[in-house]
Image 1: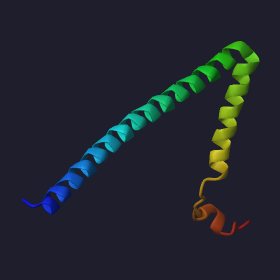
Image 2: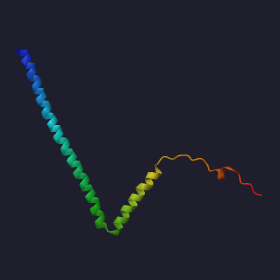
Image 3: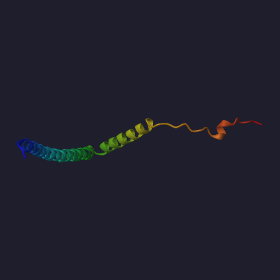
Image 4: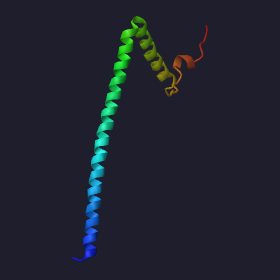
Length: 96
């Protein structure tokens, strides 16, 4: 083996080591992001429940009203389909 081959192998091994370290760091950061996301979701869920509990009956009514409003908005923005007119409305009514 000449020195050029050794140098090439050394550079390849250094690159592989750097890539492994980079992959490990990326995996740790990914796990940390997932933990942070889960913790944030838990905090938000606790916050909403705590605020409802502290608000009393009016708070419960407010939450129900918000949910009803979002439900109505869902139907307001839903696509509409054209239904055919019923037969009773298509025929002219004859009066005797």
